Image (cartoon, rainbow, N blue to C red):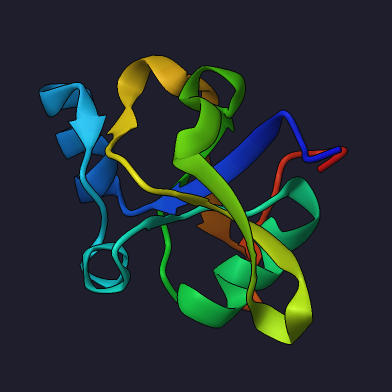
Length: 115
């Protein structure tokens, strides 16, 4: 069974735009690929390291996938892992919570305890 929640890593500017507009159409990479890239909890740290290395003050948003229904497709990506891809704008109402990801002294993103 697919996960009920996924995570989107946003820049502070993208998160501000999401809050202002009430939805997020996607980052430049999302728009180029035709869907919004999401990660499972197990994939989020690797996604941050691979695609957001050295970027501080990111926002990790928890997304409730249930109301998004069949707009979410689980598709193989990195190493054949299934990733959730959203084929629609991300509505603000689908976010259940968010945290700011900061860099530690080694330049690694610090995820919340228990993540």
